[in-house]
Length: 289
Image (cartoon, rainbow, N blue to C red; front, side, top):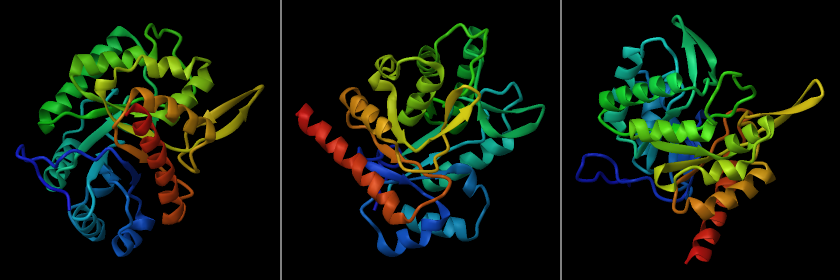
């Protein structure tokens, strides 16, 4: 059972492979209690006050370390931060004391109208100051540090003046947040925009990374080019596993999550993906030793 440290927060998420917590697996996880390193839940799925979702989460929280991953704060928007959203998130954090708490380098609302997507930012000095300020505002409100995840993207703004990796690092420095490094997103965006994924990884300070994500993607034909879409709807692609191996040289001992959000597989298949990530992590640790 997870324990609570002297600071009142749950002890850190273990440096093991975990899985995203999804509804079809609640019951099987409780009954079988497989050897998953930890679970990550989408915060907004538990904004209600009670009912079956919380009954399951409370029971699973007693058996596994837990992190919370948000998708709805819209940190990059110029709309005011939604106080109701922050209140609900604060309640959830206080109730479950997650070991890690994360959000995205993106925006999803304008004029109070929300998009069901994580939209890209222009990488400018103005956007950087705005985004870092919003992260500080959230951290002050919640009384704890958050992680910010690098995006997958399919277009770039012509007036961007900062490379994405430098923008991400600057956000962390200006706001003193941590980073959630999504290896699939690095691969997808590098393929879509023609930059080197290894250069991206080399630009990220290891001490800022608190979590790694792995997920599947699909390839879509658009005119005369192929665009990779980060859909979380299948197993991790072989090139992403290879990029993960490179990442493990630089980012050792980091909790790593398998995300699978559409075409959700059986629990066994999801756990097999986590087992593969765990084997690679252990191999990298053995080489480093």
